[in-house]
Every structure is written in structure tokens, then in C-alpha cells.
Amino acid sequence: MSEDLRRALQKIQGPDELEAERRAWVMVRSSFEEREPLTWQQRNRRPLLLAAAVLVVLLLALLSSPGRALVGSVHDAFTTEKAKPPAPALTALPAPGQLLVNSSTGPWIVHFDGSMRKLGPWWEGSWSPNALHVAVTRAHRLAALAPDGTIRWTLARNRTVHGARWSQEPPNECCRIAYLNGRELRVVAGDGTGDGPLRNVVGPTPPAWRPGSVRQLAFSTVDGRIELVDADTTKTIWLTDPGDVPTQLVWSEDGERLLALGERTLRAFDANGHKLWAIGHPVGPSGVVFVRKSHRFVLIRYSTATLRSDLVLYQAEADPGEVRFLYSAPGDFGTLAISPNGNWLLVGWVNANQWLFLRLTPSAKVESVSNIVEQFGGKSSAPLEKSFPKSVSWCCPASP
Amino acid sequence: MVGPGRQERSWIRGAQGGSASDLEALFKEHWPRAHRAAYLVVQDGAAAEDIAQEAFLSAIRNLDRFDRKRPFGPWLHRIVVNRAIDWARARSLRREITETPGAEDFDTGDLGTFSDGVAAGLASLSAEHRAVIVLRYLLEYTPGEIADLLDLPRGTVNSRLRRGLDRLETIIDRERA
Image 1 (spheres, rainbow over the protein chains, first blue to last red):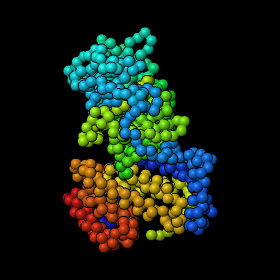
Image 2: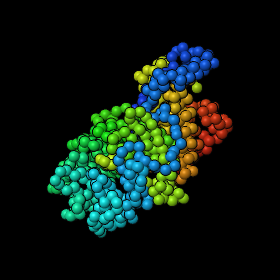
Image 3: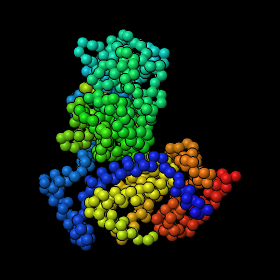
Image 4: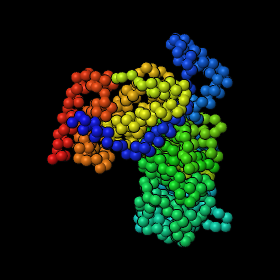
């Protein structure tokens, strides 16, 4: 029995063992490179002497500006940032622009000065290219609103309408809205005319217009393929292999890279639909946003072992590159949005009922705002995972 | 627990001095068994990956304090198995799963009835029992060493091993029949 058992245990394999090893090595190496190894002398000195030396070094590091610079330089962006108590209310945004917040009570617009407006009894909304309108949905209805909530037009469909996304607006041409009517993908012109089906049955992922194009639209099929379609001719431009059905499709700002974030896998594609790579990630809260004018992106990575969420930075190139940790906190991160100037990242920290504003450049900084649910009309007694805002888009151009 | 071989001592010394290639050698030597041990205890691929990865990250954070005369494996396995047990307990407390995990959670491939029976048997054990079985038969520690690793009395380890093996035998016999 013992020998048989030993052999049997050695045969049982974890899923995706080689990929797991590869991913783990990237993390381990990254962490290793951040540490500062002790010298032989330091390691072999008597403990008291070592403690005294470390104390002196720490004091020097704290007291001298070159010391502070050194301490700051060896860590990734936010590891040295001291936590400040969160502000009790959002009094202003840290960077120009405005937010469209899809909260449990409906879509809200937040202006640079912190003023807020609820758009009405709608379930979710998305920006038009220049924030002149918002496409909103509720049950069977799609509508285009002015930012003050005035309805410009509306149409009703036979199934639940969701995932409305506005295309870019080139000169002298009207933009369009792609949306899902149940599992049917449809497109309507920005003035509410010319509504029609594009595909009869697709995956549940909100579609994503390719930046730089008013015609090319990416969507997922029911078996997790990603298809790029010409919305004018309805012809397929490219179609990928099947995979994890994505929850999020996100283009880079130049339209050259597409990320498909599924429950277990993140896939990166180039402009021709060729898969650059796929990486696995633990099931749990996740999200992805591209850094502005870049193929680098921030990913929420939840650890089921530590019950913490990490923000990590990868690149959508042939090699995802060495992972860089940006920030970590216990519990769930739920939303990501990047400011129009690219300097700030908004992160929804669900368990803490906070938004974190992380300054990416020129130097790391963290600002936090608490009572997010209550500020958007939610009930503080409701479970946070239900009442915390589901998504935020920072305009303009809007972050996906 | 026997001491580390000359090669492993050399890798640890190199890694303590900042050598990424020595760290990689150490990682490649120990990752497969650490990952598999975590997987067999928690029965969840993603969690096992996280646990083994966190254990390595923890080991790296404490690398400078590590005594090179001691073997690296037990140090790592102590972290891995204790975290795996904690995770499995937390999972059952949080009721993240609604069904009792079954043998289908293991990827046994086409390994034959015995391995399938082992997989089914392991799934029917508690995380604490799985842990001692894995430490004894996958990582090949003695009961005394397992008691040290898990901070348990040796008698408890022996009884968990006995009960675990009895349960496995029953299920394997059933599978064979």
C-alpha cells in the first residue's frame, strides 16, 4: 500500500503545472530582485552589532535626503508610501476629467470639483467619445442622455439591454453605439437611427470598439473566441481560437493590442488577432486597464491563499515581461480607471468601502476616499460586494 | 531530516549573495513538490499555485536569516502545508464551495484505477488528514519530522496517518471492486 500510494500521489498532477511554475518564477524573481541582499560581513557579524548597524543605516536613510532617495528607488511605486487616513468625502478629483460611475443606484457623473449628478433611474451607462452624451440602459430600454440627464432619444428591445458602448467620433461622421439585446449584438447610430442586428448569438461580454476606427468592433462568441467585425459590412476581420469567455474586452489606446480578461485566463492579442500570450490567474475579483499611450496595463490579481488583492503591471507585447507589483491590500479590488492625463489610477477597494487614487507619475502617492457606497446613494447596511460601484470610467478620452 | 547536499548549500549561499541563477536552481528543485503538495491538500489548482508561490516569496523575504546548514525543503514545506491547511479550513468556514470536493477535482489523467481511488480517497479526507498523508507519502517525512513541521504531538500524527490510510484503503478497494 505504501509504495503504491507514493507512486499514485506522484502521478496526480495539478492543472497547468508548467504554466503555474512559469508564472510563479516570474513573481519570485521579481520579488528577489527587489530585495537588498546582506553582505558576508553583515550576515556574520554578531546580532547586537548587526542590529546597531541596521539602526544606524535606517536613521541615516530617514534623516538624509540621499538616503530617502535610495530607499525610494529600490521599491516599486507604492511600497514606501505612508498610508494617510482616507478623506470622508470626494471633494475633488486629483486630475482633470470627469467620472461616470455605475453604482448600485444607477449611473452618476462626478465632475473635477467633486460635484455629482445622478443620471436618472438607469442601470448602467457609458460615455460618448467627448463626454457630450451618455448611453444608458435599463431593462429593455437603451437611451442617449445629455450629461444633465436630459433624454435625447430612446428605443426599446425585446430582451434585456446591456453592455452599450459608444464608438469614436471621426470628423463629419456620426458615431455608433454597440449593445447587447440579451445575447444578440446590435448597433445603432449615435442619433438613434439605423438600429440593426450584427450577430444573433454572442457571448455576454460588453463589446469593444477598436480605437482609431468607427467600424471595427470586437466581441466574444459563446465559446470564448474573440471576433473583430466590420460593423458596416458585418464581415469578420479576424477570429481567434476558443478560450475562457471574457468578462472584459479592453483595447490599448492606439488600437494595436486587445486584452480578453476571463475568470481564469487573461489573453493578449495584437492588431491582427494573433495571440501574444495567455496567463492564468486565480478565480476572484479581477479587472484590467491599459496605461495611457502604452501597451502596459494594470491587472487586479486576487490571491485565494492570502485573501488579498494585488495590482500588478504587465505589458501586452510578445513577452508579458517581468511582473511589477504596484499595490496590495486585504480583500477585493473591484474597479479600475485611469485618468485622462495618465498620471492617476482609481482603484475601488470594496471591503474598505474606499476609492484609492494612486499617482503613477511623477512620484508615487496614494490618496483614499471612504464612504463610497453612501456617496452614491447606496445603503451602508447592504453587503459591500452588492452596493459598491461596479465600474468607473474616467473621461476624456474615457478609460475602458 | 538529513542536511542539505553540497549543491543546495551552494545555491542558498549564491541566492543569499544575490545570484538569480542560484535562486532559479533552488526554485526549480523545490517548486514541483511544493506545488503538488499544496494541490493535494487544498484540491484547488489556483489556490495551490498561490500557496506555493506565497511560500517561496516568504522564503525569499527571510532568505538572509536562513541557516545554510539546514535543508531548504522542510523549511519551505512547513510554510506550504500549514498555509494549505489554513486555506482549506478558511474555505470550509466561508462556505466558498457548496459541494464536497470529489475525485473529479484531481487531474489524474489516464492513470488507472488505483490513482483514481487515491484521488477519491484524498478528497474524502479532512485537510489535516490529507496533510499528514502528503507529508508522509509524497514528501517522505517520518512521523517525527511531520510532528515537528506541523507542531503536533507525534501520537496525533500517527493516528491521523492510520485513519487516513484506513479510509484510503476502503475507498480504493471500493473503486477496484
